[in-house]
Length: 155
Image (cartoon, rainbow, N blue to C red; front, side, top):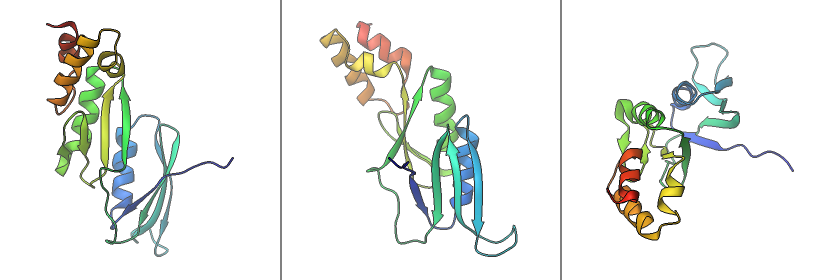
């Protein structure tokens, strides 16, 4: 089977977006930039990059299409410091905080910043604890692992 590479459509800021994403996500890099002209100052038409080893293409296709929440990227975070770091970096400079761990970056792309502990808390063996954790999550913007655990435990 061939590989699958997501292509993200931008209106002129594909290179800026790729630089942000590769600076935020560990083990990431820009692989190449195809420009409209021959000089480094010419506008980027397409940027190829990797986020944690996953290939992506960013295309400056024009204003016809924009991102919606129908497409989002999940970032699994091992601890609160990681949640906080991704949240701050992706909402900076015009990004928008959402609910339940969702946000939009300044380019309008949706991200889910999700602690790896979340599935066990909202789907755990204790149905009452899972319900409390789910209720707590639904009231949050950025997810707070300690608060979710406390809700699960009934504290």
